[in-house]
Image 1 (cartoon, helix red, strand yellow):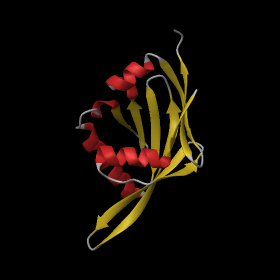
Image 2 (cartoon, rainbow, N blue to C red; image 1 turned 90 degrees about the horizontal axis):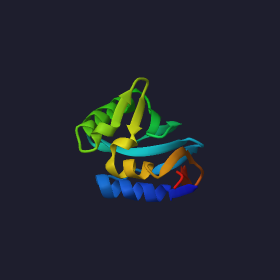
Image 3 (cartoon, one colour; image 1 turned 135 degrees about the vertical axis):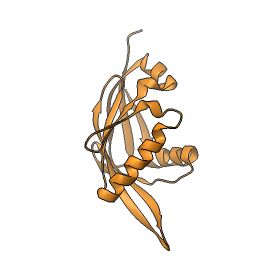
Amino acid sequence: MQFRLTYQEISDLIEKKAGRSLPIMYGGPHTVRIAYEVNMFVKSASVGIDLNVEQVDERGIVLSYNGGMGIDFMVKTALNHAKSQPGGDMIDILPDNRIRLDLSKNAQAGSLFDHVTLKDISFDEQFAIVDFVPKSL
Protein backbone atom coordinates (compact mmCIF):
# COMPACT_ATOMS: atom_id res chain seq x y z
CA MET A 1 0.00 0.00 0.00
CA GLN A 2 1.10 3.56 -0.54
CA PHE A 3 0.52 6.84 1.17
CA ARG A 4 1.30 9.90 -0.97
CA LEU A 5 1.91 13.48 0.09
CA THR A 6 2.58 16.40 -2.22
CA TYR A 7 5.65 18.48 -1.51
CA GLN A 8 3.37 21.43 -0.75
CA GLU A 9 1.49 19.39 1.88
CA ILE A 10 4.79 18.52 3.55
CA SER A 11 5.95 22.16 3.41
CA ASP A 12 2.64 23.32 4.89
CA LEU A 13 2.91 20.78 7.72
CA ILE A 14 6.46 21.91 8.51
CA GLU A 15 5.37 25.56 8.51
CA LYS A 16 2.45 24.76 10.81
CA LYS A 17 4.62 22.81 13.27
CA ALA A 18 7.87 24.81 13.09
CA GLY A 19 6.67 28.23 11.97
CA ARG A 20 9.11 28.23 9.06
CA SER A 21 8.50 27.69 5.37
CA LEU A 22 10.78 25.12 3.73
CA PRO A 23 10.21 24.61 0.02
CA ILE A 24 10.72 20.95 -0.92
CA MET A 25 11.46 19.74 -4.44
CA TYR A 26 12.12 16.45 -6.18
CA GLY A 27 15.79 15.51 -6.32
CA GLY A 28 15.73 11.86 -7.38
CA PRO A 29 14.02 8.55 -6.57
CA HIS A 30 15.22 8.66 -2.94
CA THR A 31 16.22 12.34 -2.69
CA VAL A 32 14.46 15.61 -2.00
CA ARG A 33 15.96 19.10 -2.15
CA ILE A 34 15.10 21.52 0.60
CA ALA A 35 15.60 25.28 0.36
CA TYR A 36 16.25 27.40 3.43
CA GLU A 37 16.41 31.19 3.74
CA VAL A 38 19.36 32.38 5.82
CA ASN A 39 19.62 35.99 7.01
CA MET A 40 23.18 37.15 6.52
CA PHE A 41 23.82 40.61 7.93
CA VAL A 42 22.08 42.90 5.43
CA LYS A 43 20.51 40.44 3.02
CA SER A 44 19.12 36.93 2.94
CA ALA A 45 20.33 34.06 0.88
CA SER A 46 18.66 30.85 -0.12
CA VAL A 47 20.70 27.73 0.55
CA GLY A 48 19.83 24.19 -0.38
CA ILE A 49 20.35 20.76 1.03
CA ASP A 50 19.80 17.33 -0.49
CA LEU A 51 18.14 14.85 1.86
CA ASN A 52 18.51 11.18 0.89
CA VAL A 53 16.59 8.21 2.24
CA GLU A 54 19.31 5.59 2.68
CA GLN A 55 17.57 2.87 4.64
CA VAL A 56 14.08 1.99 5.83
CA ASP A 57 13.41 -0.72 8.41
CA GLU A 58 10.81 -1.75 10.94
CA ARG A 59 11.92 0.89 13.47
CA GLY A 60 12.60 3.90 11.34
CA ILE A 61 14.72 5.47 8.64
CA VAL A 62 18.30 6.52 8.00
CA LEU A 63 18.75 9.80 6.14
CA SER A 64 21.86 11.43 4.77
CA TYR A 65 22.27 15.07 3.86
CA ASN A 66 24.63 17.11 1.74
CA GLY A 67 24.73 20.82 1.33
CA GLY A 68 28.37 21.79 1.67
CA MET A 69 30.52 22.52 4.71
CA GLY A 70 28.60 25.56 5.97
CA ILE A 71 25.23 23.87 5.56
CA ASP A 72 26.46 20.71 7.26
CA PHE A 73 27.52 22.77 10.29
CA MET A 74 24.09 24.45 10.47
CA VAL A 75 22.32 21.09 10.17
CA LYS A 76 24.42 19.56 12.97
CA THR A 77 23.69 22.57 15.17
CA ALA A 78 19.96 22.31 14.47
CA LEU A 79 19.99 18.54 15.11
CA ASN A 80 21.75 18.98 18.44
CA HIS A 81 19.12 21.55 19.40
CA ALA A 82 16.32 19.23 18.24
CA LYS A 83 17.69 16.40 20.40
CA SER A 84 16.99 18.53 23.51
CA GLN A 85 13.36 19.10 22.49
CA PRO A 86 10.38 16.81 23.10
CA GLY A 87 10.71 13.87 20.72
CA GLY A 88 14.45 14.44 20.38
CA ASP A 89 15.18 10.98 21.75
CA MET A 90 14.19 9.51 18.39
CA ILE A 91 17.06 11.34 16.62
CA ASP A 92 20.44 9.60 16.45
CA ILE A 93 23.23 11.59 14.79
CA LEU A 94 25.46 9.20 12.85
CA PRO A 95 28.87 9.75 11.20
CA ASP A 96 29.21 11.02 7.63
CA ASN A 97 26.24 13.44 7.68
CA ARG A 98 23.69 10.75 8.44
CA ILE A 99 20.72 10.71 10.81
CA ARG A 100 18.68 7.82 12.13
CA LEU A 101 15.08 8.60 13.02
CA ASP A 102 13.93 5.82 15.35
CA LEU A 103 10.21 6.26 14.78
CA SER A 104 9.40 3.46 17.21
CA LYS A 105 10.36 5.86 20.04
CA ASN A 106 7.47 8.14 19.06
CA ALA A 107 4.23 7.04 20.75
CA GLN A 108 2.02 7.72 17.73
CA ALA A 109 4.39 6.22 15.17
CA GLY A 110 5.17 3.30 17.49
CA SER A 111 1.50 2.35 17.74
CA LEU A 112 1.20 2.66 13.96
CA PHE A 113 4.11 0.23 13.54
CA ASP A 114 2.16 -2.28 15.63
CA HIS A 115 -0.18 -2.51 12.62
CA VAL A 116 1.98 -1.83 9.54
CA THR A 117 5.52 -2.51 8.31
CA LEU A 118 7.32 0.36 6.60
CA LYS A 119 8.89 -0.81 3.32
CA ASP A 120 10.23 2.26 1.51
CA ILE A 121 10.11 6.02 1.21
CA SER A 122 10.64 7.34 -2.30
CA PHE A 123 9.89 10.41 -4.38
CA ASP A 124 8.61 11.31 -7.81
CA GLU A 125 8.05 14.67 -9.51
CA GLN A 126 4.88 15.37 -7.50
CA PHE A 127 4.83 13.19 -4.38
CA ALA A 128 6.69 11.76 -1.44
CA ILE A 129 5.59 8.11 -1.42
CA VAL A 130 5.51 5.97 1.72
CA ASP A 131 5.21 2.24 0.97
CA PHE A 132 3.96 -0.01 3.73
CA VAL A 133 2.24 -3.35 4.23
CA PRO A 134 -0.34 -4.12 6.90
CA LYS A 135 0.61 -6.74 9.45
CA SER A 136 -1.64 -9.76 9.63
CA LEU A 137 -4.70 -9.34 11.75
